[in-house]
Amino acid sequence: MAPQFDAIQDLTLIRASLIKYRQLFEDLGANLHKTAPDVSGWCIAQHMYHVVLATDLGLANVLALVREKGMLIKPEGRLTEYAEGVLTAPQSPRGEVQAPRMVQPGNSVDGDQIKTEFDNLERSLTVLENPPRPLEGCPGWIKHQILDTLNASHWMRFCRLHANHHLAIMEDVAKAL
Image 1: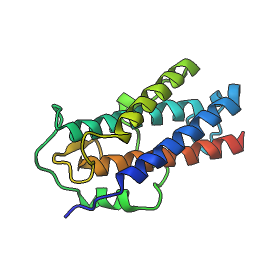
Image 2 (image 1 turned 90 degrees about the vertical axis):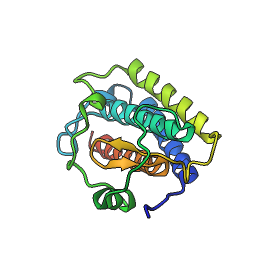
Image 3 (image 1 turned 60 degrees about the horizontal axis):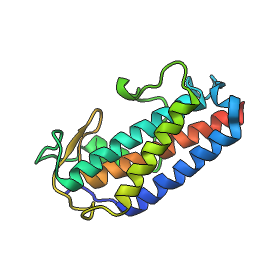
């Protein structure tokens, strides 16, 4: 049986990451657009845009599964061994996977774009704080581009791990500036 994760704890930790992103956004100002090539090919603004957009899309999958409505939902699925390893690892390795095109930032990311994505993510988090049903045990699976099919608690765990992964990179870029 696929492992289930504490979706409420993951949601709380995603919100904590969003607070830290907003603080970095405010603290760094123009430095958001500076790069530290020894740490990452993206500047902090690009990481922020990517992770907030990707997290919001992941949470949209969680909400679709909770509501049992959506064209991407498959009635059957299973967690692959690779996906289980990723979702249970204490942290994600850097530089092993390229972001899917739909969540890659452009060469230049405007601060207003980031603020818009912050607001979108905030709305998704608020909806999921009081879901129409518990996330654990929701029927259905939605395919992830790399991890294959995930259920609601898997998607929530992925969003949390992904958010923390990019937060650590952003903090390292900030230190290197």
